[in-house]
Length: 382
Ligand code: SF4
Image 1: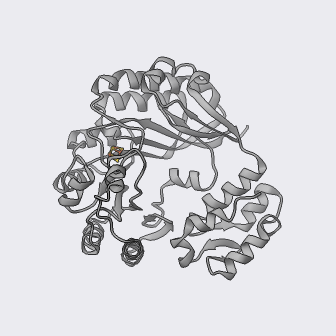
Image 2: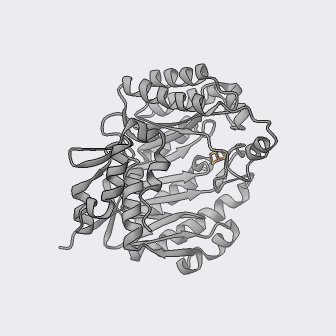
Image 3: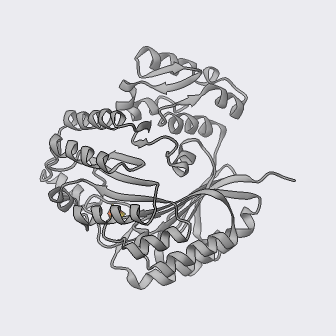
């Protein structure tokens, strides 16, 4: 019997209660009237993929956004039902839903648990209401605490919390308080990202007018270091530049992105990597709703990954992992030694103490971690 290959699924829900002031994700507020037609369209796309994925089994599903938990439970049930009807989902699959505080009632959480969602990823960002307000987050700390307690009470034992540092008017004490308070809650996983001012956001306009009081680069770097030291001391493994997990609670889904495994993105604007091609869905919600049953009409930007791109991606995605890029895995994948492709770069980066080679793996040093993007650029081939 032919072994089925593993694949991950990402489903994009592009709706939020309100729009955060730093956000450039594909998500819109006040779109209640689109909820139902959008989910119907998503179901059609799922059905259209069914046949194509017959030789695959799904081992991770990530329902992201946006704020997927803004959808009424019957619509989320419909999505899960169709996923199970159309794909082979293994019993141990990691099934994550992203949620924002204020969109999770106890009944809702119970139902999510019952329909096999086994991991919650909650966006808190900061522990101080004053900072949440600055960010334009549509929730307060209290709602997060209530939702978190309710999630534990109904049995969620795999919860990730998103936090941010380098925020306007955020002091080091705020960040330390955020980390220490979250550590006491003992979530299984934490993602800690530094704020990026993206073009087209209200923060970008304020920043252009010099009206955003951001911490200095040194302060932001200090916050990153603090994050690593406090979380590792609290028993979290720092396994990716911005991600920390209790033992065996790493995000299986995100590991697929960093290790070059296949995944399908469903929903508006979602990205896929399938059969050596990268492509994404159109970003217009109305057009997606009209055409989603016809995959060719919603998929754009097909790009066959060349050997050169495959080398590059293996390095700059793999180096995000603290465990680094295995030289043996590189050889298995390309039938070529890593030194034969990147010998000069590796020597240079090791000399500059940005990379190290340990147990036959190429890894970022702690100095390299702080300037990751500069290191990754070195792996672009001519
Ligand atoms: S909740 Fe997330 S996706 Fe929605 S607007 Fe805020 S940052 Fe963007």
